[in-house]
Length: 62
Image (cartoon, rainbow, N blue to C red):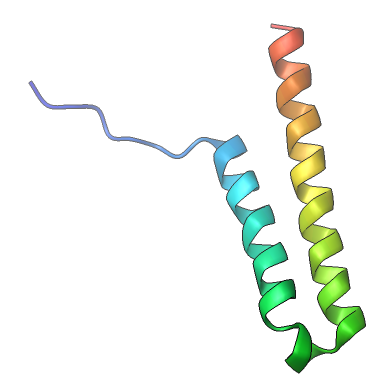
């Protein structure tokens, strides 16, 4: 019996996107400049927080 294909969840994809944005902001901050790096970190944090709240809301209202 074949296993079903594993599709990534939208929540997991959003959390990975947030982590990548923050990682790029930290790693490339010297090249991008302090404010651009902080903007990427802030954007990643916002995506992560929104995703967390949305997942929590879905869980509580299910």
